[in-house]
Image 1 (cartoon, rainbow, N blue to C red):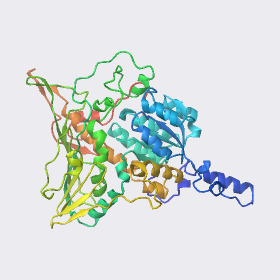
Image 2: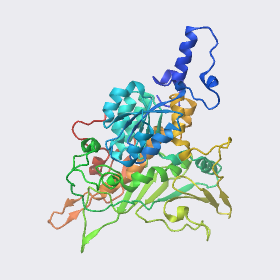
Image 3: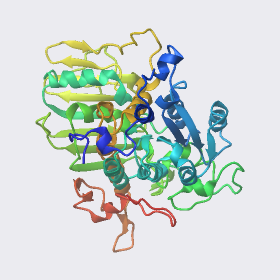
Image 4: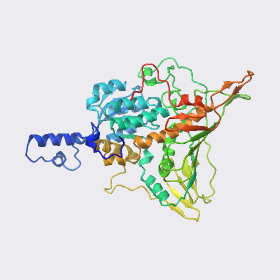
Length: 500
């Protein structure tokens, strides 16, 4: 069952009826007296306990700190449990202090087993390699989930989470907060009005990685910090020794844990063209990557790590919205596209060239920043159309952080699966899953690029994956280089699984 069917939230979701509805229904059944709502008794600004979502946060030493607290929304909801494998991180300590009544855990499985009845929803902001196992465990228990980008570590996991969200009828959102930027809607409207014409090419770029990448594999550091459960941090990944070169933050550059620059920023930057053009699965992908030379004439060979830079080209078929195939060009490591002809002299590239989006149509050029901000459209006939500024709350209050991306998710959780609030979410897994698959297709090509086989004469190697790869999106399979399919999914370490 998908989100577009005609069944109601109450019919669809075991957890979709809010506690407020349950309490009110129970009270009315017990008495015929008129019940005055709690918020009326409490006065303006009062939020009844029955109107609050009970949230558990998994991973909050980094981005998860804002994910949990934006969902908490200054007390509009409850943080009932906090789980992180490293209690020594500054933000972990700060969050424990901020939410002193929240139960504390290191193992998310133990948290879900012990606190499951008290939890309505879970934020997942761990390292990429554990997104899927945490989110799946929560969804199987009927918990709504908010999962940081990239949704998963690999394509197979993204497909499994997308399908599981429908199966378990839970409200989902990926943490690409730019998708809730109202300026995204303006760009969709510009395209739908025909101002761009037919789009043929998209350029995306970032200055990432901003962490060490393309370097030799780190050696274990020896003693693990006392507050860190390293085995739990590894989760389903291959077992390696602890080193601060992995945790915290720098894990992004290693395939065992992260997804490189594409995984870090791709779900932000690719969001705009994916949404504007109504894209689906790509059909072809090809790449080239930067090399590192520590010795003359001998490039380093580090298949365990992401490259220092990459150039990826994805081909998407025509859609109902755009009648032409689209070539999408991704560049990272500080490489960026040259100024397009339709960008007038003196007009800046997005974000001073550090990150950005260029969408080339036969009638115009659309540009914006990483999160879909500051959109501008330049037409062939010389017009310049600038996006409206983000609207401010009518009541004069401060705008919600990160476009209200987490708060909108919490409100949809209260309304329930398939509610209008749920359908209005901009990055539920029905959208975020295929987007993530397309992002990770670039990584599949990058990893295939490093596959090598010894030459018959014993002198050097051949690299059979350095070609245009063709993709069967429905079946999640590369059709012209079978060795590439090892990167569609990963082998989990013993004791870990992803059973939907």
